[in-house]
Image 1 (tube, helix red, strand yellow):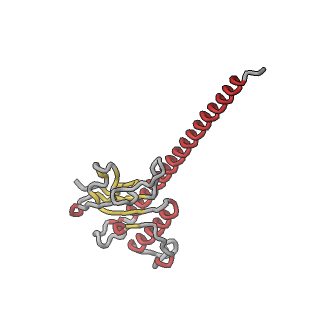
Image 2 (tube, one colour; image 1 turned 60 degrees about the vertical axis):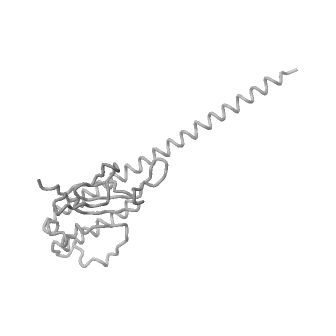
Image 3 (cartoon, helix red, strand yellow; image 1 turned 60 degrees about the horizontal axis):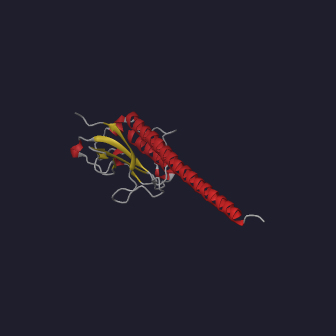
Length: 190
């Protein structure tokens, strides 16, 4: 007569093995998801750095417009929040038309904002004079700009809707997506 206690013990061993295997598969899936989120955030950061560098190059190339006083400087007026802008809002397309420095700045900004909206989710960009773009207390870049009488650095700040490793949205104290990149275009004069 077969030993029924031995058969029951084998069934328990199989169930425990399946449970351990299931835990391993769930853990591997979680690690894969975390790696995917990290890779996505890293890709967004790389794109944002490239776009900030591109705008900085456009500003340096159009120095006549970029060096204007704050009120007349179109570059310092950039406060973009992923709002679509139609091509008809431009007075000239500087590919074929002859443009002055202000028209060229408007054209460059328009194309740059369209590119920004196309590649970053919930994109936001701000160009301002800021003495301290990095907040030591928050350990992050901030959207606030402290111009300190016009002697602050010229900074390009770009942010997007990012996620933490646990899937929650990255938010600052004001419940906004913080800047992920802050590029100094023109440092503070000594």
